[in-house]
Image (cartoon, rainbow, N blue to C red; front, side, top):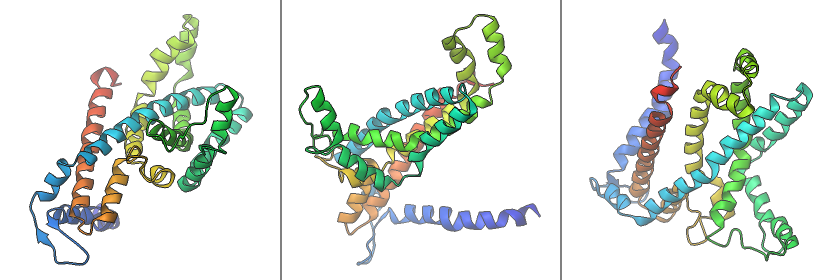
Length: 283
C-alpha cells in the first residue's frame, strides 16, 4: 500500500526531474542544435566552459552579489522579527503585512520601479543626494554602482518571507529561558547571543542556504534592469548562461555551464552545512 501511495510522486519526480536531468547530462557531451544533427564531442563543452573567463567572472560576481544581499537580509529579518514578537498583537500584525507586501510583487514590476528610482535625470535617489550637495550618479550605468543597485531590490523583495520564517522561529523559543535569564540580570545582547541564536540555528541555516542559492541564481533583476551591463558588471551566472544560449545555436555549452553551476552551488552549500551545522551547534 505504501508503494502504491508513493507511485504518483515517484512518477512525477521521474518525468519532471530525473529524466530531464539525465537528458541534460547526456546532451552536454554533444554539439547539439535544433537545426543540425548532433555530434559527440566528449568533454569539449565542459573544457570550453572551464576555460571561459566570463563564466568564472559570472560565478565570482554571483558570490559578490550573495555577500551584498544575504547578510543584510538575515540581519534585517532578525531585527524586524524581534520587533514583531515584542510589540502588541495589532502592531505586530500591521508590521507583518507591511513587510510581506513586497514578496507578492512581480520581479519585473519591481525592476521597472527601481529603474525609475535610479534614473539619472529624474530619479528620486539622485534628487535625494542632490539635497546634500552630491552630484547625480549613473547608478545602473556605472560598473562601480550597478551590482549594488540591483542588490537593493533583491533584498527588498525577499525580506518578507525570511522575516515571517524568522518570526515563527522566535515564537518557538520557550519564554522560560528568557525569564530565567532576566532573573540573572542578562542583557538583551546576552539573551540574544546565548539563547535566541542557538535556539533558532536551524532556521538560520535554512535561510542562509536558501538565500545563497536564490541570490547567486538571481535572473529577473539583472535581465530587466541592466541586461547584464554595463560592461558585464551585473551579468550573474544564470543571465550569462541565458545570454550564451540565446546567441549560440549549439546548446551543449549552455547545458554544460548550467551543470557546472549546479556543481558549484552544491559544493558551496555543503561547505556551509559543514561549517554552520558543526557539533557545537547540535542540540
